[in-house]
Length: 278
Length: 162
Image (cartoon, rainbow over all chains, first blue to last red):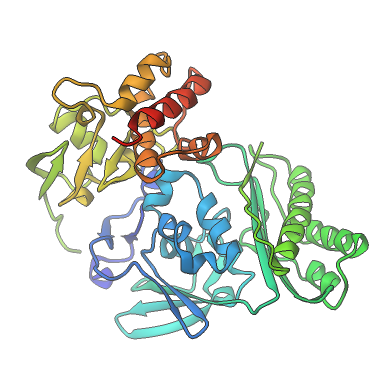
């Protein structure tokens, strides 16, 4: 159908970004194909260590799902996106396919083993999240493809994560955000994944920060190096949400807080977090 | 390129009444409610998915009706502020907003009351924090939030066991 409608046609999932963008004339599609009436495209299934989300699964459904709650960082994300009304409509598949640099899902999923299933007229393929997000507003999707499912591997025991976003108010995009997933072996950090949101054209993996933690006990010194590594990895732009320097400092602080929460969760302590407001 | 698909027939229930209309696919739900069904209690504030003045319930879930196309409500059950009262009797949420001075200019009030209704239908005894989270998508430019919080607490008390 998309092939028939031409290059300027667009898919409509939750519409919570696309409809405002159309009103502002930033998006001007000639045709919209509404996916919302497709049956069976919203589900959360756990299958042999993998959580599968139908592309049209609403953020609100993930927020209240016991299965998704097993990966606390997913709950942090789903429960913090915009506000109740937007979470009731917006979808995980739509968020990834839009690839907004400030979107929450791409940042969070970058710290997990996540795959995106793409479906098109020519068949189906599975793309890792890091290959799926190409650039700001650009994904690996061909024009006649859509996201059908997002699959996330459930992290091993001893692993804990946290996602924190700093926002001026609920409905706006964050000023900066940080996602951290730690796998601990006693007091030593076996593996670390740190992703920074809203401080680059896509979510940024802070490789140096991760290296600073890997194989080390989490002391004040290693934490400081992780913060420094995160600030160096960030590539923010000054805009109405804050100056580049401010965002760089902010993202370092968010990483520190997220590490502390991820650590407590890795030790099995249930910690509730909410986004931080200005 | 295919021709324009023209107007689309839809059927929906609003405040318990069935409506059939044939509408332009670009029409927003809030425009259908206000312009076609004369339900002007649902307001348009920012028109950019920020302020929540246009909040209605669609199949029980609070949504911003300026960010949903009317054709997407085909087959849906919509509740607007006009549907809150019952035979001239105010809904406990409406009563609590009045009693607690939970409104000043009133522009955001319909949206706030519907956000409150979704909250109270899922959580009969919300904490202050839970109320704040539930109405985070509704902006009151009079900044009367303290009394809005109070009103929702009072409504929760009055609706308990109802």
